[in-house]
Each structure stands twice: as C-alpha cells, then as structure tokens.
Image (cartoon, rainbow, N blue to C red; front, side, top):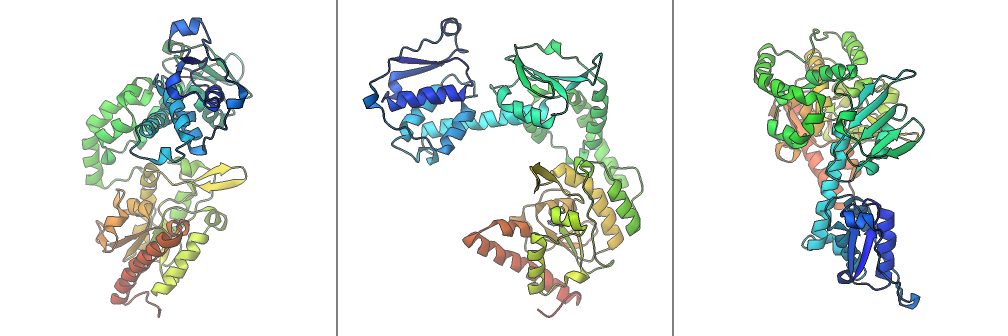
Length: 474
Ligand code: URA
C-alpha cells in the first residue's frame, strides 16, 4: 500500500502533482491511501510517510483531467471529510477511461464530489456574508479591523483574496481556530490560530451597523424558517445584529400591522407629489447600497395619466450615461416588439423598479448586477410615489424584479403571465419576461420565448385597444 500524505490539507497543487504522478505510474485507487497531516498527530509528527517508490519511467502514461474536475477538486479538497482525498484520487483514476463520469447523476463518486463541493461553496458564502469586523483603535494611524470566524471547512485561504479585494484600503485580520490572516494594505500574511476572545466584543461602528439592520428589517417580509436557513443559528453568536433578532421577530407582527394600517412607507418623510420633487428625492436617496454607488439616477419618462406604464428592472450603463430608461440593447428590442404589437411607446410612461444602475467593476467594464429583493423593496417607496403621481391605467411589468416591485413578492412569470393581475388599487398589471432575458437566449429557446413574449404584448395591446387608447396601426 502506498501512503500519500499531504502536509497542508488544503494544498490542492501538492495533491494534484502527487495524484498525477501516481496515476501516470499506474497505481490503482486500492493501492493508494491518502492522508493529510492534519488528520492524525502521528502523521503530523512523522511526515511525510510517503512509502511510494517510483515505477520505471517507461510505465508512465499521460494523465487527463478536465477543467470541470479540476475546478471541483479545488473546492472539494477544502472539505473536512477525511475521505475526500481518496475520493478525488478515485475519480481522477476513473476519468482516464470515463471522461463523462462527472456528468452521470447516478454515479456515487460523482454524487459524493458534488455534495462536497456544494457544502464548501455554502461555507465560503457564509464566511463572506457573516464575518463581522470590529475596529481596534490604534495609537497612530487609522484603526485596524479584527474579525473572528469559525468555518466548517478549510476555506480561510480560499476566501482571503475576496476580503483583500473588498477591503483593500483597510488593515485587517481574520482570526480563526486554524490560522490567522493579516492584511496590512499591501500584503497578505498568515499567523498561527487564534481564540475568539482575541477579538473585542464590541466597537463603536457596531452601533451604526445595528441601527442599519433594524431599519432594513422588514416585518412584512419576515419568514423565520427562510431566515434561519439563510443565516443558521450557529453563526448568530458572532453576529452583533443577531442578538436583536428575537426581539425583532417578536415585534414583527405588530410592526407589520402598523405598516398596513397606516400605509406608511419605510421612511418618515411625505411622498413627493411633483416630478421635480420626485427627481430630487431619488437623486438624494441613500437608503440602499445602490443609491450610494455614485451613479446618476435614471428617472421615468413619458406623459402623466398614461394608458400604460412600462416597468423594467433597473437602468443599465447606457441608460445611466444618457439618463433615460430603456435606450440600450434591451430597450431597442423592447421598442421593436412594442411597435410590432401596436403599442406606442411615446404614449406610455417608462420607468424602472430600481432607479440606479447596480454594477460590478471588472477592469474598465461595469457589469450589470441584479438588484437584491431587499434593494427592490427599498426602492418601492419611490415607485409608489411615482405611480401616485403618474396615475397609469394599466401596467406592463418586465421581469420578476418589476413584478416584485409592484406585488411585494417575487412572482412566478411562468405561472402568472397571460392574464392581468389586479394591484391593490385596482390597476391591472401584465407580467412578462424582461427583454434582456430574450437577448441571452439562442436557437429554439429564443424562438419559443420570443413567441411567448409577443403573445403577452398582444394581450396588453388588445386591452389597450378595448380601452381605445395607445393603439397604433400595427
Ligand atoms: N433594463 C431595464 O430594466 N431598464 C432599463 O432602463 C434598461 C435595461
């Protein structure tokens, strides 16, 4: 039996080099036993215990591993399951003759690998979502930030680049039971494990964060089961805001009832009643991160009292640059379909659920990012004010985000398209897909979805014709 020992349990490159060598020399999985030094103190005390003697070079064969396997193995190796290294080796061995192995949903090895990857991915996401920095005042210079986190798997190093990029200009340390990561603004270094007590229990910035959490906690949206699933209880002890959750849940129904009774929006100022006031208010809105991202808002355009309001999701970069909704590629496609359906865009009011462009910067490019449900909910206050001002008699909602902005829940387009949905004030709303969805499709899917989109617009057009408004000769 060959015992192959990995000195660092998350060292994918070391595993890959050794595994490639063993496969190339023809060692079947039952001949190789993989360990990592972290698994046993004996092994740790007596590394590397690799009793393998290289076979003659003549027996070496080329080893193939496709990108999908390498990507998944990269993550799976971070799992704490002690059997993961043997599993990876077995899969690499089998891939030599079964290149489609990972696509077989019934294969137990493929299934086990997918499971490990899923759990590691989830852990990576949890660390990004639930790690909380606390400010440590420094004698000189800006504060240093410390955070304590207990991941389930060995994901600390894999996540380091994420925190480095996100907090590049700060000095911070992430302390964990396995190792500590330090970023000094220029380089990332590792230090020995730490203890939870090494991080202060409270800091001043926490009060700001707690206030923010209270303000965005929406009692009307409260689903305790879903919340616990997303934010498992075991993370609560390290989350300052979690201490508030029981009280917020307890008060949620009361607050929801109060919101419904007063119809109060999540702000205490009165809703704007002129276009200018609406434009000013939106331009100054900082209630969610999109409002703070420095982009110019894109306001709705079109006549007041229109027969139709067309609602999109959010402006894209072309819209942001020109300050007008639906003027980029999705807008061009929308215009073509509206014309074909006999709906005159110039007589409709066109706007978006979210008024600022949400993007991720990639080099010089700004890539569109979907707004979260929370961001859509925050912007609903502006949309409600806009609707009250514009008074459309019918609404066409393009995509699930637009649907959510109007309904207060994320609708199923598949189930809810094709007939008008009455909004609480009686306005009929038609729901269909967003034109940018059509732009992403090809072939048969594109043809099928385009036909369904046309059929949806034809229904709206027929309604407008019945109302004798907005109908242009097709
Ligand atoms: N997509 C939208 O939803 N709205 C726009 O204004 C442009 C693209």
